[in-house]
Length: 173
Ligand SMILES: [Cu+2]
Image 1 (cartoon, rainbow, N blue to C red):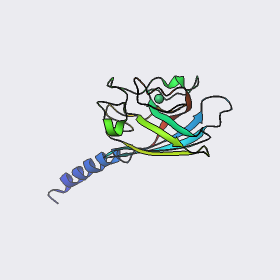
Image 2: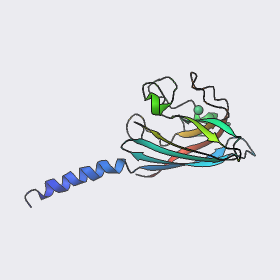
Image 3: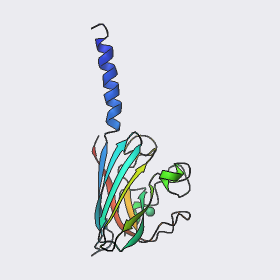
Image 4: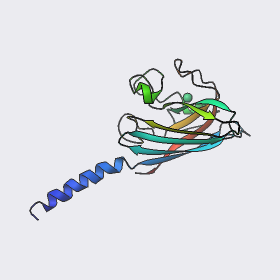
């Protein structure tokens, strides 16, 4: 057992580091106006390849709707309390999975496709993004679903009003 403590400390570091990647979060998405039919939820899981996000929505007009992570975890004032896009580097607007953090905002998730039944599902991985820790932690911020399609124009994709919104709550660390 000469190396006993060293092994234990080493294992502790590995497990300690590993815990970061087990972090999970949830979002309860709600309509931003009184009587809105919009609802939904999201699950977020940290992984070494990035933040895995699954968003499910209901009661949304059929078609493509922009979906982004905004700065603040607040949804009052028809979603405007969430502020602008979370954009710590002052990067242009884009689509994070293909553009990366130098040419897109950490929460630039593109569009969520909603069917004729009003339901939509998006699964996406955001490389370099985390729930907490580092410059790109999105825990406590908000996921915002927009009225219109994200056409990837500047500065925020010409996505119109905010129809759904919810705070990203960290559920396990
Ligand atoms: Cu947005």
